[in-house]
Image 1: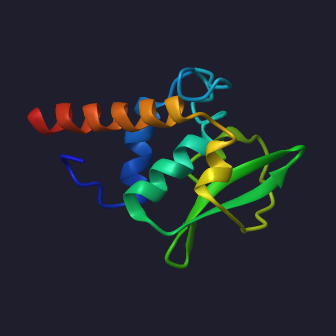
Image 2: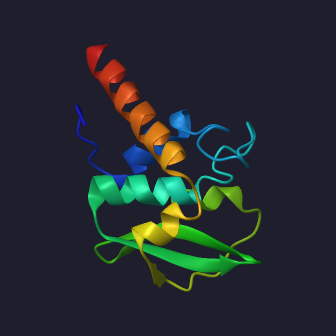
Length: 121
């Protein structure tokens, strides 16, 4: 990445501008985090390392991250009510099975383009 992202909060603001229906098919303009948990957890892992975790939300797995001792769920705003966190370990392969390589690569590429454009301003 050309410009270094220092915190998960900073990353959230970049991701929010990069999410779309192409990066997660459940995306909605009024709920941009909806359907973005898989691709987002992969990108967070790329940027900060740590662990990818999962929890059951209804019949689906919800993916998020732990960096150091802190749980970071950059897509929790998609839910209308608080969700339980089981903090079960998840692998990158498991997360990729919940999204697609194309969606993950698109989100990564959009982030890079956004950061490059931001740096040039």
